[in-house]
Image: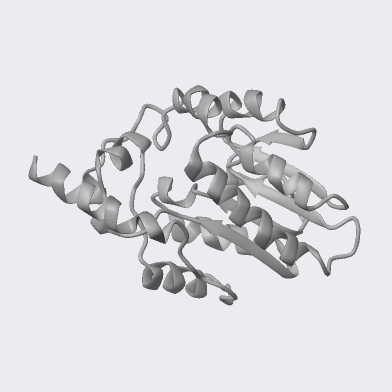
Length: 210
């Protein structure tokens, strides 16, 4: 089903979404709840790290999560990277992190390694997700952590996924298999916003019937 998704002009993300999301993310309940969850987990990961550790967000977009990372990691060097300059123009207003325009599949970091890498609702846009995960693993310092969020359940696939340029939604089993298969050791895997899952499932079924 995902393979039939219509791709936006950029090949994975429609650039008009940057301005639309920037206008609503700070007050929309879903983004605010996700932000609180990210903040809580990042603080736990960062707590034992020595000052000067490196944090990288891949696909930082308009900087909403990058600002969270910077606040949660005050003694770290935090970097945001995105493929699209359109997103980075918004990100520079949300944090004072170093921002880099670049492709995560052809990163500019050389031998530099990161103690924490975040990739939030990005992987589902990429057809070569396994290869991307291998590249992310190579960027991690020994003992480093990847913090990843993706949309769940192909049963929830809708026109929103197509418009957003998604290639897939993930099951827990698929995500675990791909992460372990690319060298990661799973520490924690969970779903958030589970309370609205019945409502979303009903909405998708009604949409498919229509």
